[in-house]
Length: 276
Image (cartoon, rainbow, N blue to C red):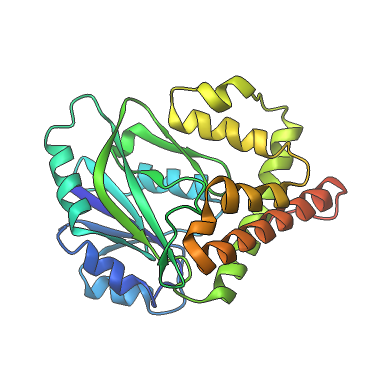
């Protein structure tokens, strides 16, 4: 009843654990951006079907995959290589698709781990749309895309475990350097296009994803955003209760936000002409 979609590029370190967590499924699709390591070979060894496409940006890449990959089943569960499905989540998604009612997508709760610690508090959001009908889902934004379901959304129990630092701090910083470039480009593009923003919808929109979009646009208007983000995660979200991991993660997120601020300034001054 459920197909699996895994997006990858050079994920040989993490892919085995991911594949083992979804081994219950007989229709696993590896959507790969031309890895140069053993990611594809490992996936094929586990029986996954491989589709390759050059990466351009997150929304375009994910939308292409949903429209062009031939899934065996009507429901798709999307997972990254550094994520693992818990046994409780597996049972919950299998039950959900048996009687979905009018739902076209289901939200799951993700647990982020850092320094052997579950970041219970130092997260902007722990809920993501990962189980869906592919024809009813699309994505927007160049990076950290917003999921846009065409229909009602439900929720399932269990956890999706995420290990974003599995390859070390250096790799996390390298990846977020790339993300910050896309984020800066998205901000500048929105400003040039005069994208609409509603303060009211940032707090009252019934749809979670619409609310998240307007909250992002509100956040981009804050002065001293890196400081605001640190205070929000560490004090507002009570990241301090996550101990040293919560403090370190909140600081890393503030640094990431400052990278975005600097790159927006460069883009607006015409220093960057393309996103690499």
